[in-house]
Amino acid sequence: MTRTRRTTALALCLGIVLVLVFSSVFIIHEADHVCVSEDCEICAQVTAAVLLQRGFALAGMILPALLAGLFAARKYRAASHRFYCASPSLIAWKIRLND
Ligand SMILES: [Zn+2]
Image 1: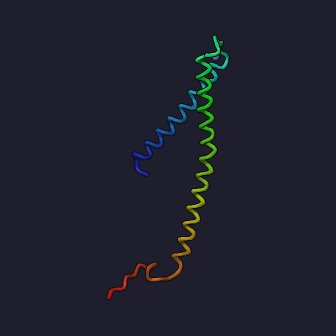
Image 2: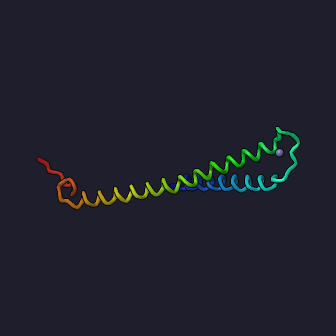
Image 3: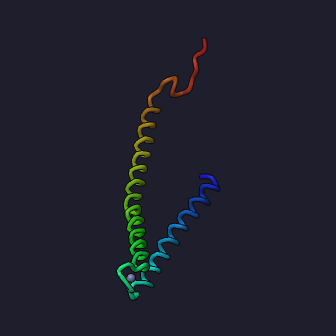
């Protein structure tokens, strides 16, 4: 992984963590606010923050399963490649037959 990709990934993870922390703080802070009407803007923002956290929670459940699948596929591919290369052939040994 190059340095630029690593920095981008780190910034993205930090942004996600900050979004989750600040949305949690907002929900806790505004949990007992006084609603002035049915069209309360604070309630709308709290609902949006809850939906945002649910979205991240869903991604947090799907991502480990996806990573486990990728890890298993990589192991399977490495094992099949090892089996294929174990059979001796000129192509496996990278020997070229010139006329
Ligand atoms: Zn409200």
